[in-house]
Image (cartoon, rainbow, N blue to C red; front, side):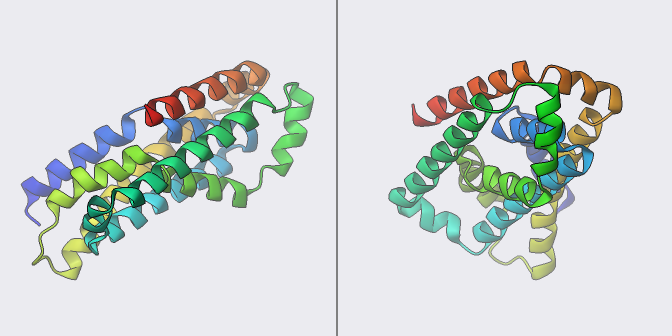
Length: 202
């Protein structure tokens, strides 16, 4: 893969990762409720979801999805259902600081990993990125090393960006402020997820 092509791909990935969306909301939620380690786990799991999409695209799944709109619709509506479920959890979460600390104990790393992976895999915006953009960088004659570099680029940039977000959010002063206003943040999170769901459907 030529350096110019790699730089173009990396630039697109950076811009895509920095665009606010449901992934950012999930990283915020898990960092706030579980702490730094949960934030890092959800970020790495999100990167794994991106990596899976990249591998599937390289294997030709992008073309299959493009030729079968119903398959893309399944991904889209499953993503909306997942967002609505997360919104419901935000609206019905415990609001007091004491209850939040109790809830933080039950926010397992497994739960963080699961939600991080699923929010990437069921995000229609990410699916469209791989269908419309990532697939354009794939050379049918590319060797295994080039393909590994492409997968590592898109997943690595994504995971590193959200790990950085988690590290910033988990600083003791900022995290304490977030936790003291958890009832407000939960409601804002729920509204944001509802808005994203509506935008996907419309």
